Image 1 (cartoon, rainbow, N blue to C red):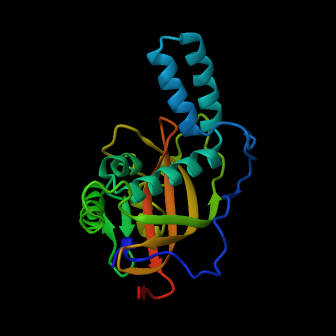
Image 2 (cartoon, rainbow, N blue to C red):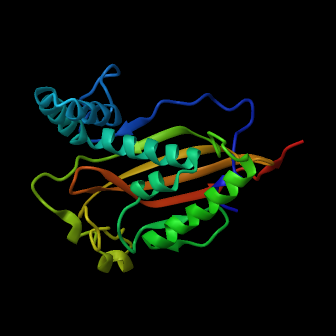
Length: 239
């Protein structure tokens, strides 16, 4: 069964934790600083209002924050789970990398490889979840990521390391770059997130242990190239 079949943990499980990060460069933003998504929204609003001085300032702030690898990976991971929770296939598509190496392993399933095949697997999941939730449901899947751990080394500067992470190296255990056949060339800079997914799939509950791998594109955005979910513990049928 796919990730949508797993879910909310036992009552004694800890409350949602703030993401913790491991990086050779510390995040430059404080708790009060806006995140990437907030800055992008403000930038769009400033451009719409033709406030170009503010837009220039926000663009500089956004670039500085995007240079922080931890912030970029954290934002990409949050966007993925927002798409998952809303069962929004368009947002999910924007979260994925662009290459045949893009892979998803849903709990209990074989690996699905290639952007289009991976996207189709999410389309099937979302279609079933939406039917179960009923028409007009604001939230199709009750999913919550807890115990979020982020590892994101600094993105390479003035270099493209995608050759090292090229598909030809996949036979040696390296993760292939998504730089082929896309409009945002992969740089080879990777970020890894581990977390526990609490998911309420409707008639069953459980938990999924997930590993998410993101690659930084030439546009500064991190996109998912691997999602691997494993059910733990076994699902419990609701009373």
